[in-house]
Length: 620
Image (cartoon, rainbow, N blue to C red; front, side, top):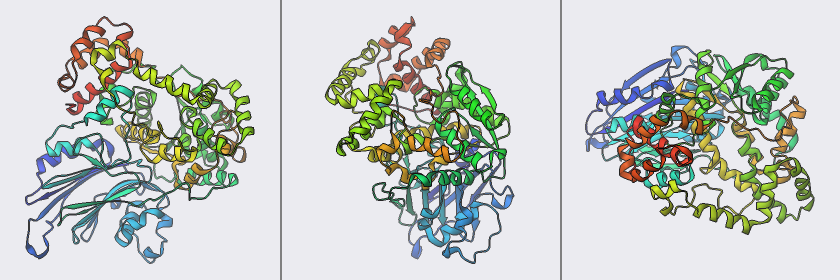
């Protein structure tokens, strides 16, 4: 994986001192090679108007074709590619009719993407299977194409001002070149204080003012001479029209998706979590005879059965995994600040955001720069009872499928979470009243800060959705739902230590399984039933029919308790936070410690204060 920065300045040269300072902030994303190119000015048509000056910088993490011939910025003629990601089927792309007869000087995907874009532009992207964020500059035409992959796994931000355009992999680099502090939108900050998640959204408008984000499955075309932008969705996936794949197709697709993501010229690892998703990746890997190509890693916090299930799955295949013992909430305060710096937005202080930082650091120290995981299984195959069950019930009610309901009632005897969701689904009015009562209730901490006066709807795209399961999964994956949040956290945690994270279950050929019927996903008290069943045709594993993975149980309460002086000092000293909120009543309430101090609100304030401390973020 890589990181880059590109700056266009109208009417005057790019400030190289500021560019170099900004570019240095992206260094962690590409530790293997760095280069900066200062381009010849782009002259206005007819000689009327200011020249456009441009500087491009790229930090490379070398994974495919380690030879310097694949270094970036990748240039031929007056075209330049800055690229972060992997196209796993690049050999197939080379055989497209538009590229027939093209001679290649490299053995990687960078040159393939370059020549494909030169021949087809954004029309190339539907044929690509992978993850990416790139800019393609055509200096002769005075245009730039910036695009992201279907799920937005790789980040891509931009700013368009009166005389400057910045495009880059991180918000901090763009703000550093502009000489501004990142300013969080007030509505986004308030929603985080209320709900604890800063949802990434699915639109160009991000959480930072004046910094936009290329949307997942979209591109932005920049006409430099006219100084205009034109966003466009190159991926027009509609799960309702995609056709319903047969269950028998899934095992072969899983084998192919996993095999494609093992293409690497460097060592590859697998995060084995003890859940069905990473177990499905391991099962497909074993069925294809590929396990000897991978190092298996297990993270153990000592507070759940996850690591034990992961060990049993590996041992069933004769694999000796490496177990990494993770501190159960005992992270140092310095690590927390590092996470704030690299996340670039507020995050819930849970295992996915906190413990995974330590996990990736340990893997990087073992010389493994590529890691596969099971991300996407919950969102594609229906893994969240609390988010997906009521939508499946909507479909079952429409079909008058009483047998399905009886099967889940029977299955709920062993599944406490399902019993709760059944009650909510069967008693929607009572559940709605209960949720409203909980939201109206305010704790002393909320009242001390005045948060009880905020009246904002949750940004969760599923909160008010009344439709069926396919629509819910579509929103959760592509419209600012849960998947976007996890991808954001995983990318930043992995790239902090120069690790490329790959997710086979996000292979675009598996997207059709969002549209398979509810009774293939949630059945007899099991979630992700069709994914679990696919392991029968691959390699059955102990975690296949495990009821519910717990996930990393990272203890925010322990962290707050062990670091109380530092926590209160950081929150109390946050000038921008004090300008946004009256912190004095809150600090008087929580200084003695106790339940008020250990509340979720304290963790949220701490995260915002961490963003101010590390990025200079403001919240006014």
